[in-house]
Image (cartoon, rainbow, N blue to C red; front, side, top):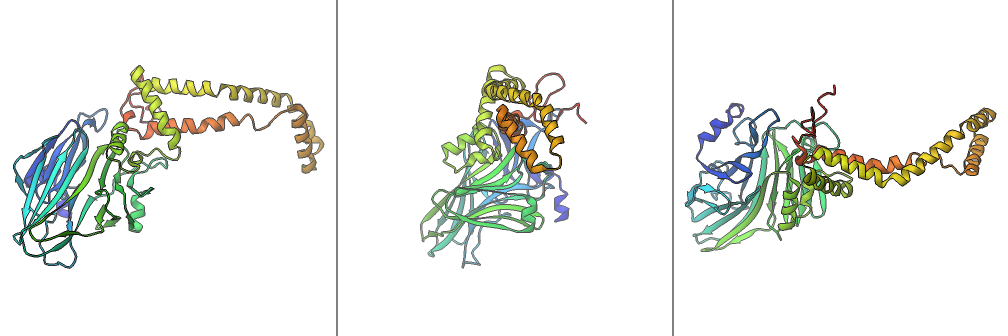
Length: 416
């Protein structure tokens, strides 16, 4: 195992036959060994501002940073039945290039009467539709359980900050579940659900698998043999009778987490809370709407920095009446300072009497001592939401402002 992990990515890719894939957003290939999606590069995102190299996301299973997605069938009670595994060599039927509106079909015959197929479709963005099929040419009946699995051979470097989640993610029913790598190192997570999705998320990138609608499934997040896995298996068996066929559909996402695209898939495919793949945080109801406001001003000005300045000015303007009230209250408090000092000196040995006199003073002068803090407290969620937007949305990644600020999502380069 250790030797295989040292093999370079290009060497592994060249070592097996592959189907090339490409659309407007991604380029890569599918391994015919296992029929695995294990080679994806994002065409529109660079590794850094200084680099011309595109972001490489998925990697073959035997490379140093293996990260891949596989689908298949499980059985119970047929231990000797030959099934396609991650080392099975599939054959290509017909077309040998995966592009939008140009699907590929993989086939494998177990020579025991069962013919397995995978129809893989790719849209213009980040969605793979994998339709698994089995044709039964034997005289026996079987029960199959379709599954899908994401495997990551390593623990990636995560951003050490509490406002961002990186690791395992899923929505099961109506519940969002987020778990760190260290959580899974300690204990496996298992859950049953009738709807939802699951995957592994990075700051800007996502792998996700979505079970076929209407099927109850069991999901797992686990760590084993220094590998991290997110998987599901359909709980009810699919019956395959003699001279019949069965099919199962799995939607697979290998995505840059662009807000419009993630929201589009959530709506079009009716995936429960798929928009939460982007970490909007506790203030979701503020953060996400503010993003659309900033995006609107960006389209007007062409600069996210200016868009944020306009938004900040609008927030300040909206809170001006409250702030003005606060300033008046603080001015009154300043006038009362001498009297407050006199009372503190007069009742320095009687705390209860001091509090009573102070409250009487506030009431007599119609002053609220906490009113000066109120505007600040109310505005904090808004400015935290703006910071969250800057930090988590890929739209801000590598976006310049002016002068020395060439990446709004990074720290100020002049700071220590």
